[in-house]
Image (cartoon, rainbow, N blue to C red):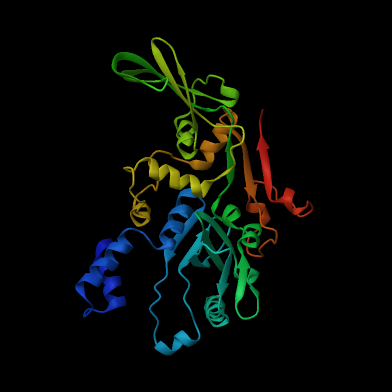
Length: 348
């Protein structure tokens, strides 16, 4: 059988789903939507690929025969293998409600397929841009359906110990500075005591700062790229000859997850208003071209005092299929949850 181009496969997939007699406009719209990477499984595949510990992630063909098999089995969205696991199954959901819900019949069919192929069943849930990955066994029976609240899913999150996700905090005062030399005053306006000036300027110096705003020298390129993952605050200072623009991390800024940093890195290279095409991202040799290795960049940023701390999350209930010895940090089963959630590496 000859090679089939990925675009051909996309068209073939849509025709299989809708049928060759479907409205051409409907077919074209379906192809367009899939090409935009709207399915959440494309985004999760890109995240797992970029974080660095995935050996294989691919979609499962969900066309089943005979039709009666659908009464017993539901094929999950993805098959994956990570550095510290055998093959496992992932069902992907994108829901904004605080509770994720599965009907008993749907969950039974997913579990039946997982038992048939003897693989663990995981649920990936995207909730307002935050991804969690947990074992299906953590879904609990409510009155009718099997549910899990987002907070409980976070406590059982496996995205870190499987794919290598982590959280980090940019050091307060770290950022980038631009010194702009004033060349020509283009406009001067005074209104109600407020003076507005418009200058033609030329950037004549760019440098970086680390913790507490101290000047930095020799930062790794991947370390400086981390600034594009953070919402830095703008500060300005003026002199007769220059305007200095500073974009720095604040004292009260929160944490950033690695998988959310990927979204920032991809958006940085897109025209304003454009959407990330996740499907195209996973077709490239590298999901992100401007950062070679995310985890190594964070470690270097920690050493160079650009990142203040790194957090490695472990789940509250340890899965049987993941050996603890395979992790880059030592899991703890003795500490209370709020401390066990993360291992902090901090250098002053």
